[in-house]
Image 1 (cartoon, rainbow, N blue to C red):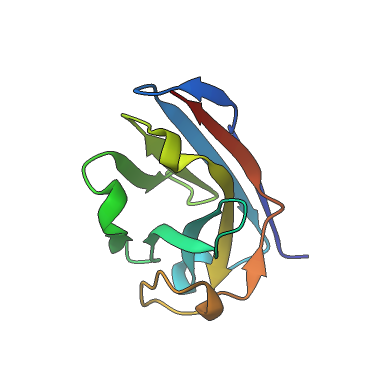
Image 2: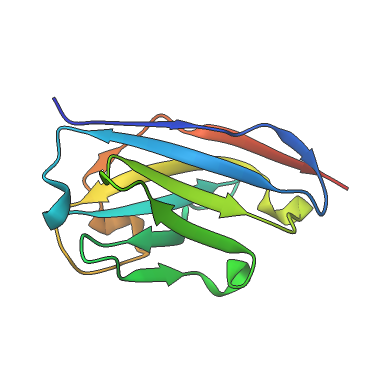
Length: 123
């Protein structure tokens, strides 16, 4: 049973920090890329960051320098550390898995999704 479970989303003030976690089970993680995505009301789902089995990473320009993706030593938890949060970061954040070692921020390239966690940044 392949599963991704996100946590860590909560209300936070502008300028604050949050760390999201994605617990991954059932995947041979050395062959998968894990991505973080977000979707705000009325907007399309957007790729935020991703990390491959070989630890290659990618970020959307709007979060570079503010967000960092990483994972636990056993590769079963993928984190998204978010600093200097802005109201425009408000969204439901999802993690997803892609059966490829290539990084991608295109949500259509991902096959398995978690249920999402809400991040709300107030000004």
